[in-house]
Every structure is written in structure tokens, then in C-alpha cells.
Image 1 (cartoon, rainbow, N blue to C red):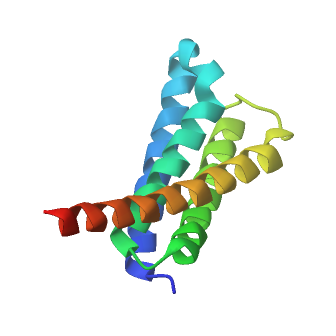
Image 2: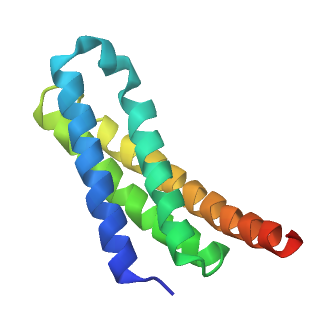
Length: 123
């Protein structure tokens, strides 16, 4: 149901982007208010890209997107914690929000695959 090669690639890219975003926020104070939004955006985008590559249905896309979101959110929250940006209280909240955003990104990625296949049939 889940392709581990695509999942590993999406997780690795998402974790790198999350860490870079949080590290940039540690040095650029104007980014700090956007930590949660940026983490959600990266997790959702990685879920979307995973589901577009997988193209095996909504459940598989949402499951892989949720897995990507969990690990991306965990990296973002832990990096922010170790850089002194957020208290421990944000750990469950940030990971939960990124998980849901990654799963939603997976659903929209599969929807994109269906729309593209429909548009190809129209030509």
C-alpha cells in the first residue's frame, strides 16, 4: 500500500526543509511568527508530492502523507526546541497539526492525479 522508496525520499526532503526553515528562523527573527504555518506548508507539500508520485488511491496517499507529516513535524518542533524557540508544550500540537496537514496533502495529491488523468482523456 505504501511505497517505501517514495516515502523515504519525501521524508528526507521534508525533514531537510523543515530544519532549514527553523534554523533560518533562529537567525531571522521576523520568521518566528510563521513557524507553525511554515511547518504545516512543508508537511502538506511533501504529502502532496508523495501522493502524486504514488498514485494508488486516496487512502494510500493520505497514509503516506500522514507519515511524512509526522516526521516533518517532529523534526520542526524538536529543532525549534533545541534552538530555544518554543517550549515543550508545542511538541504534541505541532506534530498533530503537521500530521493532519500531511494527510490532507496526500488526499489533494491523489485528487491531482485523478484530474490529470481526466484531462489527458479529454485530449
